[in-house]
Length: 386
Ligand SMILES: C[S@@+](CC[C@H](N)C(=O)[O-])C[C@H]1O[C@@H](n2cnc3c(N)ncnc32)[C@H](O)[C@@H]1O
Image (cartoon, rainbow, N blue to C red; front, side):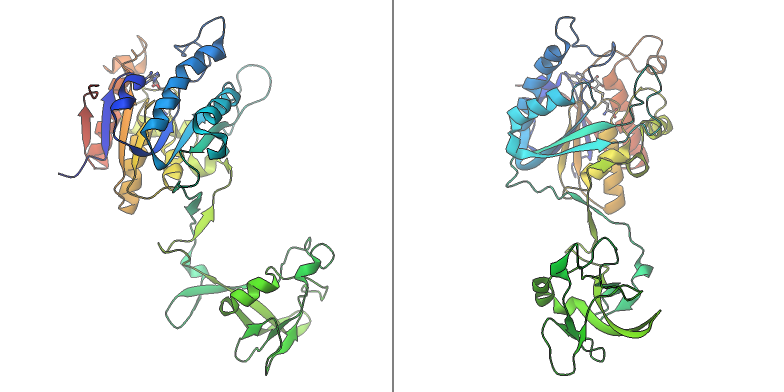
């Protein structure tokens, strides 16, 4: 039997982590140091108590991560500075990959005085930056109809002007990119030096003002086949111009990849409100601040589709849900281990009223529902004995 997409282990993560097989990706959303929900709060040194809870768990997390792996940690303003220093210490500053701003509350926090905080962070570290397989890009959603041309092999492309159309870039601001190119509008051939049948082309804006190219001379010399010379008609009549063949398919997997920026918008990954709605849909309104599956799915996109994922502060089981959704969408074979302690739910809460006595019960309920609705199976595994 193939391994279940989702495995759950109940227990204190510090006890569970050393018994786990190596994993490729860790995503965690530790309890935040806010309000009463934080069990590790103490009056004398809140940050110290929180860090004392986190330090051994980060050390254990590093131990279980493969050399090619990476860790993503969700955190808010209260602890981000402390956590970053802790992760620098445990993983090494040289393995810091990013501090992403995640706009999880687009309306902003309306409670209390001061700014309406509308974001949290994701701290991203490699176990070993030199060997990490994380690719900080995502599949771009492009409409193939925007690529109307095709070459001899049927590969589709579109023409983009090689001229930089942004007026900020001109011969004054970018002098090395203003030079003549030689092209033959009959054959389409382009070169940086004259050849038989070529005409000289200099970059100009639509109104005739001097412009600059987007590619340097060496780049043109390297990739002349990705350029084409054509006669076009503009405001000032016909002129000869140079275009880049922008291919629909670029990488080996056939997807156009777009580099991930370090600001992730709720419109791209979902918000806390959408996360509550997702959870309500599958088990009920039984957890206060889940993360949206879109956030975890974007993280999953940075790694291969057959990885082992670990979330050892699993809460409502968002990570396992996202793994199943990602597998269902792209045929991947990711597996996910979720860990949560048997922290009691509040008497009178929706969870308790629904018969879910602990947070571990909530995690299990969601992962079971995920297996039923999306597939991939579910295994409720006893904590490994040490
Ligand atoms: C902020 S919540 C995670 C929410 C989750 N990302 C989601 O989308 O539902 C943190 C969770 O960590 C759990 N937790 C706290 N300390 C733990 C420990 N030592 N071992 C395992 N789980 C723990 C809490 O029960 C809580 O559910």
